[in-house]
Image (cartoon, rainbow, N blue to C red):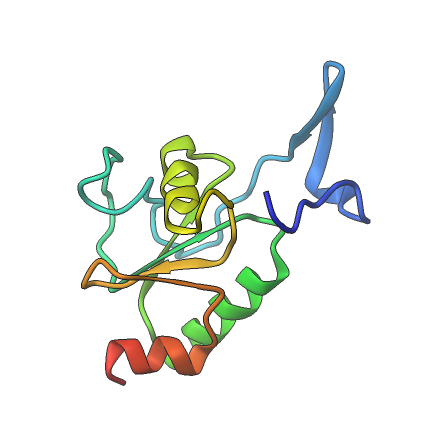
Length: 127
């Protein structure tokens, strides 16, 4: 996976379980939408509807930045953690020539963009 976190100062995001490190449980933010396991049609359970689907990881700085920019612009999106959803990880690999590169964005028309700028997202959405 690209941007592998290793242990680079991320110890607060990981906890020791058995003989290895596991991601620490994430707390839901008050008023946050229910998590969705992926876009319609790929086999996941859909519990929210959004204009854009963002495939990301919890430790990805580029993902955090794009999420903040999209929220600031009022662009609705659903986040799918590819480390927690193997089908989503396989989809991201397929789109990115075998690499699990995040953020990968899926637009309503079914097209994808890898690590787009907020301007590119706005343009693809016609905003």
